[in-house]
Image 1 (tube, one colour):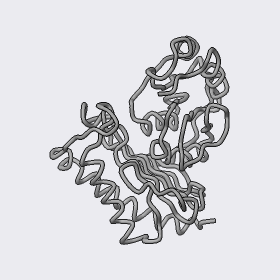
Image 2 (cartoon, helix red, strand yellow):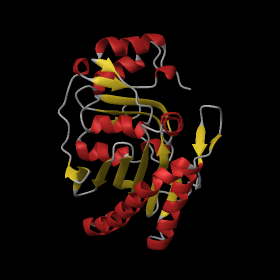
Image 3 (spheres, helix red, strand yellow):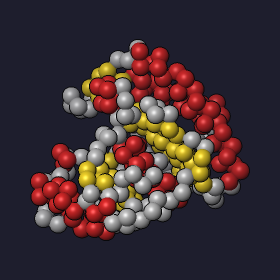
Length: 265
């Protein structure tokens, strides 16, 4: 068990680092260079790499015993459940950054012996920073964030990637829910669930760094975060996931799994 005072000390260093990233980000974007990874839609930039490297340098200086598990590097998973482990997506929504220079964020989470203890989602474009400290609270720009009110699916906006759902499932979700939105950055779509603006966000092929921060936010805000069979998700491996307001969780999953369910990429 990590003491809150220790977490607050770590949080102070991380918040200072996040502030530095915000200050330097505009110049990094001006000099942005883009490459593809698995396919033409799977993009990475020098901005992603520079932010992850900067965080690694901060850890080396202040917390040398902490491990790092990142999107762009550090993929050794052998001991990630031991001691302190950070999971980072330096730019979540890289395609949005490249094509729009908008709707992208940083996802960052600290786990201790496999349990989430600190989490951050930094919405750079809107200067919104979501922060969670185990045992203390959840904040949006330093203001405490309360759990959202429960709402049924018929009153909720939902978020999912329509390319990976079969037509019947997608249309059933659209028919029953109040409406559909997709930002295209898992951290930002999830943050809309934190605030009650979305009822649920569904991701059929989430990587660990896509959802690392959401574990603690879900726990502390009374949200549901599981795979599609209502089972816990392994923070090291990720996989299909839903983060949802408790009021629409069961109905959303029921629709998602009927008629053959979703189609995985």
